[in-house]
Length: 167
Image (cartoon, rainbow, N blue to C red; front, side):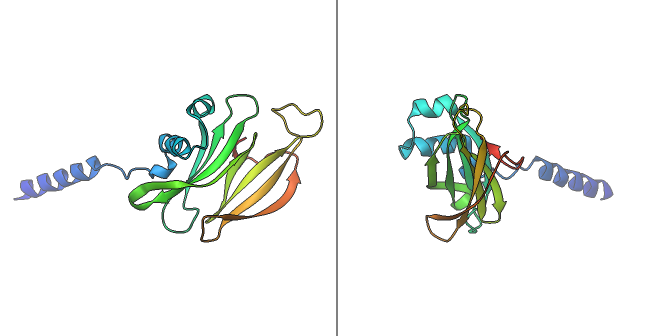
């Protein structure tokens, strides 16, 4: 009997070890983000292929228990990322539509709080190269329960903090 119990315990442990990990939310998948951008006619396939999806931050930005994908799209050139967006999470780790989109060269993203994020917008002075802005302006976006994110601006800073991705 002891041998059978030991066998059953080890067999149970093997099943637990072999259980698949929970799948990542589809709203955070680069391939799903690319498809949504294309299907919502935000960029052409050639533009998506040139720069690709650069940074993705997976977080519940709306407070509904579903992960959203906060992402940037690369430019394929020296100006860094050319756009950012938020892909709404759906039921059962699915994906909804892109609920926020803005195209602007050189932007970077950071998670701020449970339902907020920040975007760093480059500020170019006369004579700045396209790759190298003199300063950044940080804007905070907060989910307010609808399809629009409210925002507030903070000070202009001379260098991008390390918490930012993309740019």
